Length: 214
Image (cartoon, rainbow, N blue to C red; front, side, top):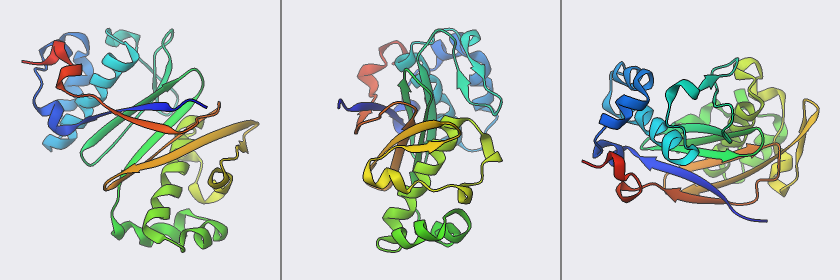
């Protein structure tokens, strides 16, 4: 099975860009970014605009719609999903429903495990708590985003253990597939209604964003 590219852009890359063209093509999203109090949050929001533009090919903001729970999509373009955490914004695209999640690893979040994982998931997690906490979490979050159920689907009400054995999970009348990987300090996962395969981290650098380079 082919690798699925997962496209990423860093806060530092976004910081170095000329944002003039983004203001022309995605003015509302850029206005939304300006409302964030902290610079990193502004840059992550802009990073999402860059990924939609350069990976999905959306050059006109009017093409973007929002699903019932706020998930962006664009009729006539590939399905895609965005996620961000820490210093990274990521995007995956596909031909079917798809969700992605990236999380910066923080051991302080381990205390939340009993509130979001089933007893069987907790048992599996406890063999390697920090690593497996985020593997489970990003699987669950990416599945929720693929299903587009918002927060109406509580993480503790379903198990993602089939993903451990690279098996599909049957939920809401459909089979779901997932993959997970990591870079230093982060865990990320993708879930889709078609087989995902393994993930290939593909970082967009300044040379990939020529029309935004000052």
